[in-house]
Image (cartoon, rainbow, N blue to C red; front, side, top):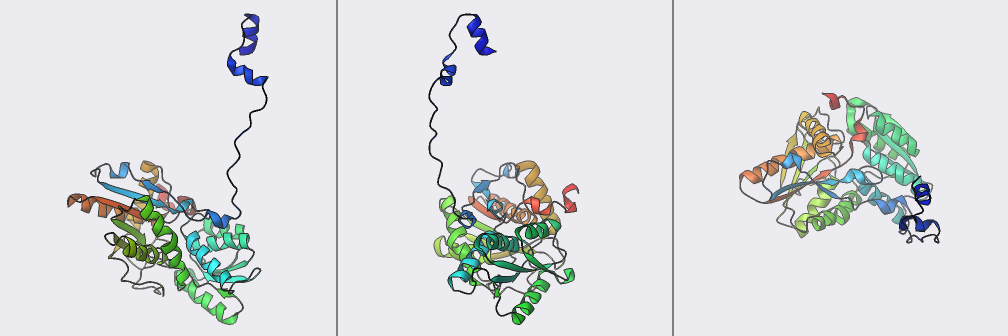
Length: 335
């Protein structure tokens, strides 16, 4: 209609229409493609909290390390990648072979993604009460599941994986809880990323304890390369909790890779406080995160207020393991 009006008024069309008669415009070449999903693991951003820190001075900042943006949806992509590549390099895992392990969900999903991409099979021991989102995701990737007694939690899955490993020595038992490739993946990737992203200004790193690999790896890296930074671990406040994937160390099977001396301080978090932070992160920051991310944020904000009250500057990084889409069936969203 716009062109017709110009014709009727005997006026030339504006330059915009010159392109209709010109040669096609050549677009710049596309960026190089990714050869494998494995190459996309890591390099996640730091996201600053703004509304939840509005009552803090400008020199006290809290950031989330957005691990839910990994291709498999969680921080466990890093550990699984390290464990799998280490197994392949050492000849313990072969193409077409079977990787066996126990998981509460996220590591299993990362294994399953890598199994499909790198041509091996996954046999995963998983508590029967793991939520439907995780089980359906695992099935979608083609994993074979061995569901264990929900009353035994993640420890029951570990015991079953150990039993199956003894029966089938031909399987590669990855043992994420005792495999040094777990924490080394974070020493070599997560830690350096955080130090670079904060321009060396990090004062506190906050991470929860499950396998403990993230805290052990990043913690050791910071102790070696940023000794002024404080490593703060946390765990559920009781054996009966809703922080899926995390361990109450006093009453659980302690992971062999866990070293209590890596963190400068260990704290506890109530399930209800984690739930509350998950809701406020979504509704006030636009960040749709999982329960352990809510717990990490709760601890980080406690530290931030203490540092502000003491008149100190602080750059606090909380490790946010996964996104809220893995918890959609949980009831706490509307409470």
